[in-house]
Length: 135
Ligand code: ATP
Image (cartoon, rainbow, N blue to C red; front, side, top):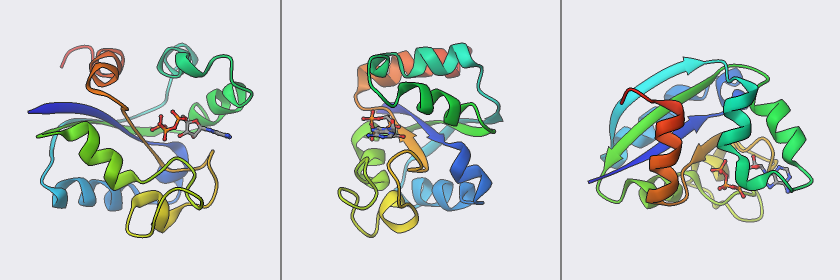
């Protein structure tokens, strides 16, 4: 089986959608291996989003992800990376995510798209080391 890092971003926590996200993960059949509500250090945010450091939205993304608590979840199961990305829906909640997905059902703007999920097993292991070093 495989692991992935899921984040309920500050918009999801503020809007009270943590339970909704966890419920969808569990109903899919994936397992919660670790979970934590926490503020994100700027340095952790920078490392997490390092691949976007030259993008125009990088600064705003760091401000946003450090603006309030997030819920970090280590999720485990067969093909967990792809399975969660399917639950989340596409990055743009209106143009790409379809109804029935987390973003498609609950979000309107790309910056405020509620959740993060690792995009490959390799990214997942890198991100899990960053977010859950003791796991
Ligand atoms: P995540 O990595 O959070 O799961 P993703 O893989 O669907 O999202 P990426 O392209 O890796 O999308 O972008 C990372 C995050 O940066 C997005 O989830 C979104 O919050 C933000 N983002 C991406 N593109 C834009 C944009 N054009 N404008 C504002 N924010 C953006």
